[in-house]
Figure (spheres, rainbow over the protein chains, first blue to last red):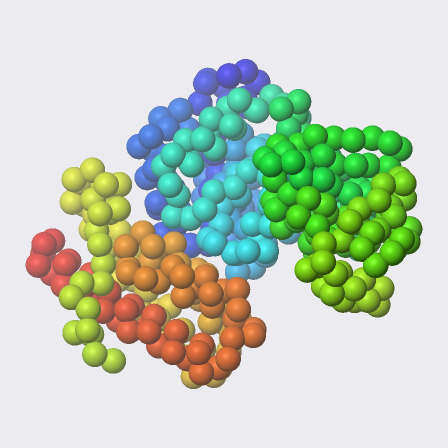
Length: 258
Length: 121
């Protein structure tokens, strides 16, 4: 591994979590299975986390998503610069995981499955020199600040690297088994290895509606309803509305216009 | 609550695994449970008495990983439901779910205490 801030091949790491049990457990797992990781500091809440990160300049931070004094995202936004990689840690919680997945960030579920921990460390090592991770954190922080949902950026991992798409540029998405074709403004198209259901889960509360088993559409790009079962989109595509989705579609359209 | 309903509440498999037979390390996890969970249980009871749904969610969210680690039976699904539906769940149902968790936690605390007394003292 090259260019780590530490002098040797060790990875310096700070754990920020306000639960002493989680601190102990993660410390034990890292010490036992990852001798190359040197835990240089523990932060008992967001405020202490900031202090430790500034002073200790770690390579890697395990960061709790929800602490008593602030969220992990708030903690990151209070740092002048982010020169480390972050692995978010969280108990099961739908909206937090959704926000992390929307931004394609790395995360682990407490109380930490060993295989998942190994994979996360492996990804950290493989990507340490890539600029992606801090860039994705910056995008995530901007998404939180952005008031207009359609200006938010969806991050997706692809074989060619990370793909960052502004929501207002997405016209529709067509599912094709384990893949999806994303139709964008300017006649662009991207193929991603996510199912339509995965994308629906990330986008359903952000102005998108699954009007058909194979199609997810953006409200911003509906030009007209050509008849009761077809939608004309801004790129000229005609998308069918399935019979069983018709009522829900009308309800969504009315709701999203208010 | 009758703590006799269940034979056992905790499963020490994870603790044995992470401790690799080191009794000092096992004791550390057991004592930490004894230290953290009773306090949070009292907070949970207070929050339930005050119908403070947000507080109930927060306490359960915080406790959840430790309870999973201690293998406490059937707590994951009710906690996930309470976390996701804490605002909308009917009060009666919320009371039933939280009271069942309280019952399991009381049983688990008593079992952890007994384990420390019989195996480590």
